[in-house]
Length: 68
Image (cartoon, rainbow, N blue to C red; front, top):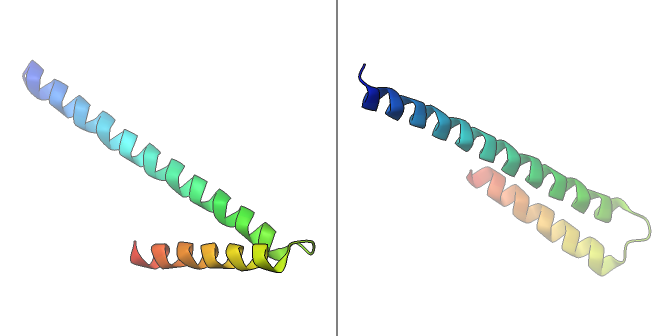
């Protein structure tokens, strides 16, 4: 394999690793947001409007999850 092919292979490998890391970070952030919304929804001191908004946002996450 010549130098250009080797460099291209390494670049593809690094790009693939970066995409995987980015996807994992995105999933982690989404799960943190979902957990925070669940806490708002389940907290006894949450106002009805806050609870409603948390449920709406949770439903949006569910809709996105089924699309992806």
